[in-house]
Image 1 (cartoon, one colour):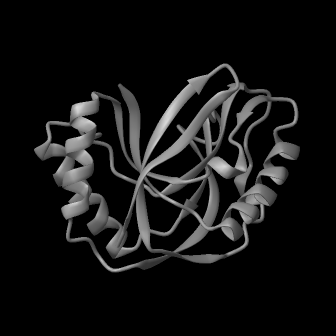
Image 2 (cartoon, helix red, strand yellow):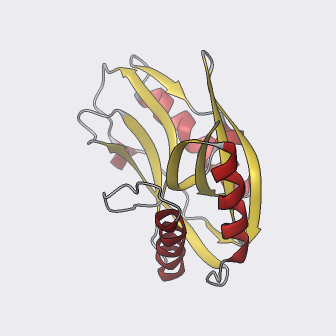
Image 3 (tube, one colour):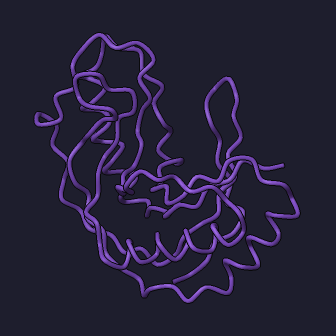
Length: 180
C-alpha cells in the first residue's frame, strides 16, 4: 500500500525563491516551533488520495495516462498565508494565482479519481506550496511583512507522488509524471 497524492511539480528556480521566502518566515516565527518542509519537497498538491492498494494504484496510473488534459499554463507566486489563519497558523504556505487551466486540470483529475471510487476533498481548492507546519506557536504570522517576489513559472506536467512518513518528516517520491 502506498500513501499517494497528485501534485504540480515546481522548477528549481521557484523552489529557490520559496526557500529564500521561508528564511524571512523563519526570522518572523523564530520563537515558534515549526516543522519546515525541505525545499526539494516543495510542490502544489492537487488531490490527496491517502493509502492506496497496489492494484488500484496500477489502475489509477493507467487511467491518468489516458487523460485529455489542458495545455501547459503559467502560475505566479503570491503572498504568504496560513491555515486556518495568520493568528493561529497550523500550516504556513505560499499562494499562487488560480489559472483557468489549473482549475480544469483539478476537475478532470477529480473526475478520474471519483470514477475509481476515491473520496474527494469537498473544500475549495486553492493552489499553494506548503512550507511549514506549526507545532508550537509563539508569534502571530505577519505575511504582509514578508516579501515574495512575483515570479511566474510554466506548469507542463503533473505528478503522482508517494509520501513516506518518518520521524524526520515526510519524504516524497515521484511514481509517475504525466505531461499536459
